[in-house]
Figure 1 (cartoon, rainbow, N blue to C red):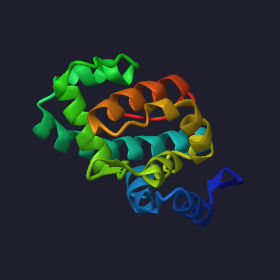
Figure 2 (figure 1 turned 180 degrees about the horizontal axis):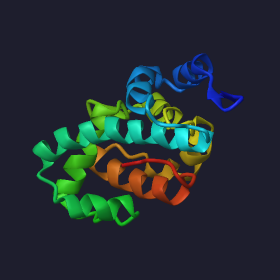
Figure 3 (figure 1 turned 45 degrees about the horizontal axis):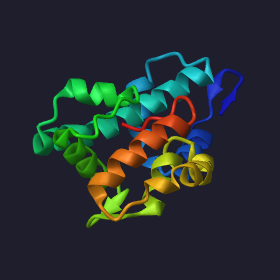
Length: 162
């Protein structure tokens, strides 16, 4: 995506589209056009920031529904899930619904795969699904906690889950 220290915009656009993140292209370049991106890793970090911003929009919406204490979410982001915290469960249900991971209390495997693909982690879907298959549960309240905990244990470093 870099050639002679210049970002190849078409290559970046194709890369983002392949990950179902093409909609972020314009926003990323608008925010980054004044920055000197001579390191592709730095540019990748900007892509992750854009994904985090997109995810944070859903969190904001779900905070209104769940009334979750933001500190509880920060603990969950560190892999510490309080299975008895109803606000956390409601927040995870809201988030998974908005992300397409579940719909009408039914798990959407393609939604999980798409979520990982948006972070260029789609190739880990099968591995996480196998390791977390015990998390599949008819009760969405149980599923969101079990699957989230399992995914945090097995997802590759750098994967944004919450």
